[in-house]
Length: 327
Image (cartoon, rainbow, N blue to C red; front, side):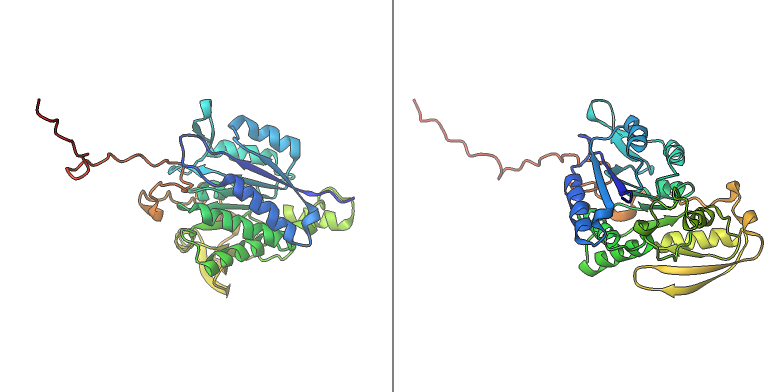
């Protein structure tokens, strides 16, 4: 019997943050997976009120292929988990990268469905094949709709880039508000234009057949030739091209473009290794304070709760008082 693809669904909604639909999102993922013909290949495990100390234990217990986080992200680009007495606690980004580096043998996709998580997802792309983050404030309904569309495509046997493009196209089709800023990051050496799904390649690392060995060699290969890179954000795409142009990219040519995704081929003016040294890596900029037009209201995944405004008292709002009869 083939080993199933385990999806570890983690959620955190501390009491000092706004209420979001984490339970509805988990149900949406389960129902969308059940629609596809590959539904029997997936196995969903849900854990709520996650604390930082729970992450390592759950990763070792389930050995998931997909890790999905539903919750809040702070303005300084850190995810928020449960802390002492149910209050929110921000997670160190580098510590999260080190944790997933330890689990990179089985984790292939990390989806951070929370605001301002693109820098964290970009850092995880150094150790995980695929990571998804959000560069700005996203609405609660948009987060749930994206998750449903993404896992529905996986249930129909689509590859991660195709499932990502399908979910983005569905958001545009339904005109879901506050749904911009969702980005896909791919690890260096992974073919972004591949059409092989996770369901088809799952278990190849541990199989003794030549196909499994070929897949391990493909993942370990240090590609030095030109590769197509996929970008979903105009701001991030421009920043990346300008930064890398000063570090060795000669030209960038768009080879395929749709309303949901763009594929760009780079021509390198000097060896790739010189362009991607650790001290030359592109790091995404922090979001501006007013970026995303986030008001931190009910249903926002930004990790802030709405403060109660002082009540204005007018003469018209005062209750009428009856005069007491004369004695």
